Length: 366
Image (cartoon, rainbow, N blue to C red):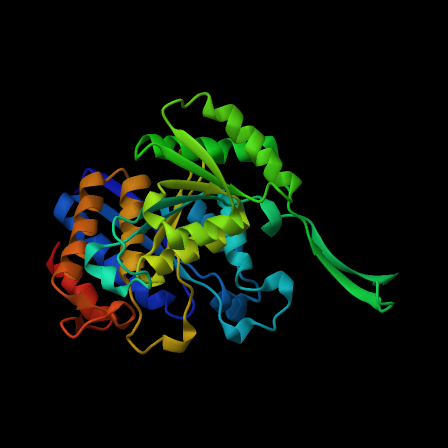
């Protein structure tokens, strides 16, 4: 019997989620056998498929199963099928519920340009893009007070406002402190450069972010701290992406910027992510891409982001560093040998494979 055994909760989700999580589970099984530890997988439902079966996006059994696991592997949730369901039970509520229920406040989204995929980037003559976006995950506008009301107020042209919808951006010092400290810690292990992205010229909450970051920076004198407004950052990611190291930012800004970072590195289908909380809390690992229902079942889904998410799971939740290194190296070798899914293919020399076929190539290199 293996000396070490871990419990992994798997939430395949919707669209291409089941396909890419299946690939990642195969890879996890392969490295566990190679390095002599045991993985016990339990599958749970969340998102649109849970709405169809249970009427809610996050069944209690799913949340409890995740809480009792060492780590959670998530595929993707949502799709047009559920666009018209009540806002209170949309599939995306499962993500918010999992993050809140597991206390996952730190979202790590690495954006790495693989040398082999440089031609797939929409940017020309770029290299050495290696950015880590540290996104606050359980505060801000996604979790703030929201609602609608009818207003009798008039606009300047005399027309009635009618129904008004609102969403509130709110952050406390404690919420900002813990995520900014995470940013500094990760920067210390990289190139010692941290960029805080905000909208401090307009938002009071952003001004608080700057005050907190400035205070904490004195504890990390080796780290160079700078600030960018989110609109400027979105431009600079295109103009000079190679100058960024670690970006720390709020929930909504991180959500948007990490998708942009994904595109400049060749494909959002290559981006993994980790959502982490306090030590001892099971982390949740998922690809940054969505459920892509338009290609579900066609074999076109790129599983590499989910496989790289599995590598993060091995590294951050299980402390199986050698296994994580091997998975990442297997992905790199697969790309170096010219194998691609359709979303990252860019030349005649590329061999375009389907989901299961490129997974097999990764497995061959483990």
